[in-house]
Length: 194
Picture 1 (cartoon, rainbow, N blue to C red):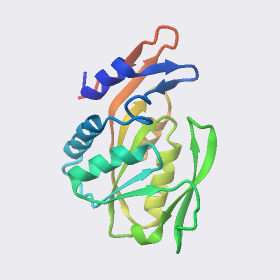
Picture 2: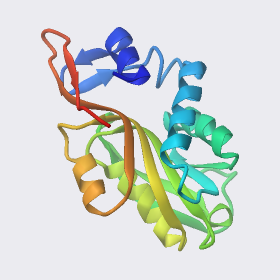
Picture 3: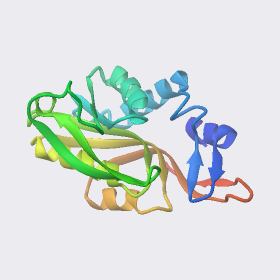
């Protein structure tokens, strides 16, 4: 069992509706030492890939992406979910649906930060149905950039997202893949990974 699986078993809470609550260390309160270990592990798993940018989506992926970027020594771009007066110029826009929030958002990346010379590692906290990832892949491809790989903290292996993304031919590395969760007992089972 790896460090993230151990932390999920210790502090994660299974809720109704296939929700794994990890807000005490991952997506509300952030454990920076844990994030640093995750960044180091992503660097190890993608060591052979060219990466000059990391792309994530606001908000929960930003902390993990920043710690990964520290190990890769590259900048982080995060796709914004809302248009603001600070966003100017041409934008890449993709529509994504959130499993957790049950809503659709347009995610936006300024064209000045992503172009055809970029080798992009996409990082996110969760993978359920794969909609957010597909939006980030779409934005990367709109820019003419290359997706070097995709790093996920927690994948819900019993949902379709991981299979869909892997079937598209991308190297997808999830630090913890939840095979099943039981809301009554709170039990969490992980997929074996090499």
